[in-house]
Image (tube, rainbow, N blue to C red; front, side):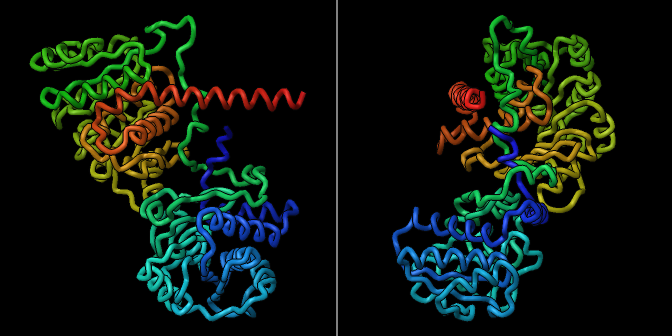
Length: 505
């Protein structure tokens, strides 16, 4: 598993990759031919022959469309090609591939959709920087109304490849075929919903060009963190696997219990819930193998933190927006150990942002806000990826900005977009489990960024396995099966590396 396989490139970075490939001797016409072939093959794998209309734009995206049209026609498909502009205005590789197309080229028009059983959207790629207008917009709007199956080349026309935002209008695709590396817009909403099945095609650009680009954004995948995952090993014991502490709320006790069980399930050697005297019986009765510490006074949590064996601390789930939660969060951060702040431990600082950010400085903390909690703490603007990055830089914490397209951002600018979370996770309590997974992994020594990435991926993987009807307790109960799948994947990757090593001896 190679982390660079999961790099996400902005349109500007993709342009740099194309230039680097050209400098290395990879001809643009050859790469465009490979792109067209990839589009045609994706279509032929999914659909039986039918009339296809190819909508070509005035740039390289249109050139890809001409290459795909020629491949389909050669395979016996009925193909119509429409062009925005004229062949005479095309330049470079796009002009060459338009010349290779021997069929008729019609002016771009909604008429091209008449009789079509499938449409290839090759109007504009990921680098579009302004809203669709004029004839292009008219045709895309007609395409949306017709509800024809669409195959998008690179991205659906009108989609910003860097942000996932729709620039005016974009037609949903059944398949989006993109090249070399995915773009952030394939994973960020609403782009993720418009792209359909995103298929990444290798068109011959060598991976070494990434060294000249230095991507900082990745699709979250075990390839990013599996080599560092804290699997239990022979000779270990519970004290070596860390001791996670969860601050337990006095009324919404279920949240802390879910978080504590998640921390325990993901491998923390010991887990303690710190509970008020009033709530102590509830926690003690419900948590058979989790320790419960009774807090009778305002300073008890800070005194609990004095024990350095408590190496990972979670404050927030079900804690309440109270002075006690604020004190607990600050006491946890003051230890400079692994700290995770979630939910109420973030909201309680809505009017004291500077106090929180000062305490976070140097704390190696992870914060896990949803959009509402994020808005209470940060006033940054922009797309989700940009906002998460700005928040991480400002707070100096790893920020997990939750949602269907969760973004994990580190203060150094590294970021990952998590794409495996199903809609079934949209239910109360799943966020508490996520926070528990993060603190459990931090207790075992995984660094903040990779712990957050691993927790988000496991969270989504378990939810996909459970499916519709998921409740938060299912995430904890089914985690061992997800860990077994993850371990098997790691073992397979290790065997492959060993095989490659033997092949080179």
